[in-house]
Length: 102
Image (cartoon, rainbow, N blue to C red; front, side):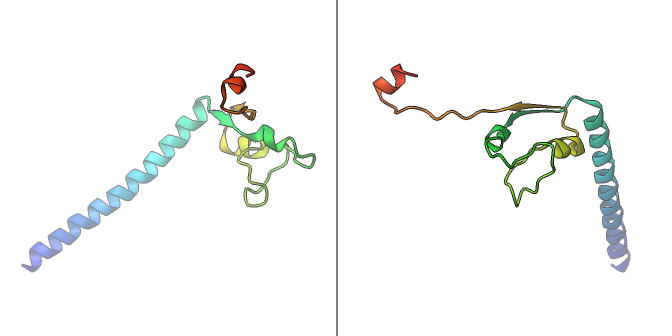
């Protein structure tokens, strides 16, 4: 009985060690791929921040202080190559007249 328990414990330890090794390898492989490919963010809301005269895209911002997810320093740190800037335009009333004037 003790032999079975020790064998089972050894198998679990080996599998756990292997899982840890695999996670590291996957993370390293993902980082290598990320560094080689063109990384594109297809929807960023940063133009809204540009409406504030004190907001600088060239400065690194804290999300907690200015709830923005994008600035040039963080783009560089994260390996972001291209960003499409989304612009929000308020819609008109959902009426036949509002739809006709859009």
